[in-house]
Image 1 (cartoon, one colour):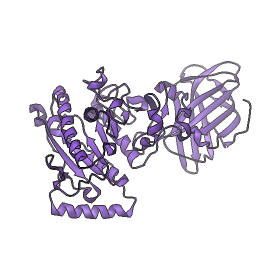
Image 2: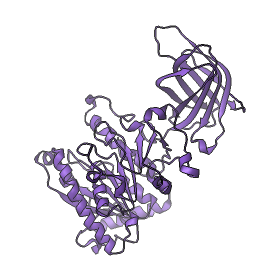
Image 3: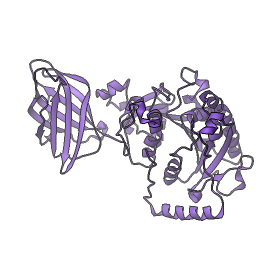
Image 4: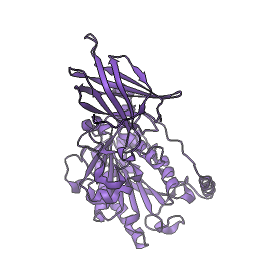
Length: 459
């Protein structure tokens, strides 16, 4: 996965770049410490550096003097402040995504972005030694935030974005302020050494006024259970599309799922994607199309994943911890397009199988395979499914529907469809559903038809 190309949708961003270039000519620019494998083998003692980026120096990090933070001109406590905190660095290299995170956040808001560089301390082949350093990093950040407070900064305006171990550092820092800081975003919070620990020994919802978390690698390096007011489980929270499945892929096999959390979040910051997440009791129920009810969130509807979920803060704080699910594509743009699919069949005997749908408009085409399990189709019983496509093709001019059982050597079956209805998600948008009536599907043979507006029916 390469770094994202930065987007500059507004002319004022070009001016920012020019100003930043001028800054770079006038003073040295700082970046995250770059270590190597020998530091990991020997071990690195803790050293924390705070690098400041603003719209005035968006490409040229200023090293903050922690004893005298305001000795340089760009730190302004009247602006909100976002901290970005990396996690374990087993090889000592800087995170490839950090610059993109800084640039995209500054494109959204005129704020202070402070990169917490604790590569000295995060680089060690002994993971347990790195875990021991998370508390001291939090102490240093606590002291620095108190200095901001003394100059008039509001804790409400503090946002901490922590990746892996950085999520728990954010939690420890927030706990030192009794949960008064504004927001903590946890991107795949680390699991090893924290799983099974009580809330005071890890990130939990009391560490900030609002805590949102994303889980992408809970079966390896990530934390499985909810840790926030809202927890997002992308693709169920474990294996991510496009990530290697075998160890023969090298280091990507170990880090891809874990690191995907950052790239999903970047898509939400730069608004490449607006992904609706659905509250559900399990990922299986979500895939089965049982979780479209968003009434608990009132008129706002189901929350969107990522940077803008803060818009749902008030309603989420009134609820218990909320776990939500969504699926993604293999690469950016990661967002998928969902449809609720209702199929009414009239076979006299039960049929089992899976469904494939293809939408076409001109030369555009997208396909959804609903095959994570075999579904039961009964006579005059409506079966609801969730179809998710890699992109929007609307209005669909043609739809191809295919029925299959997966049986290679058995007899070929037919599925008689009385009605199929496709309703765009989320349902609260009240977009017009598409229908078709009286179809005969031969197993593994696609039937193509033009959708028509759905009729009102008691079926």
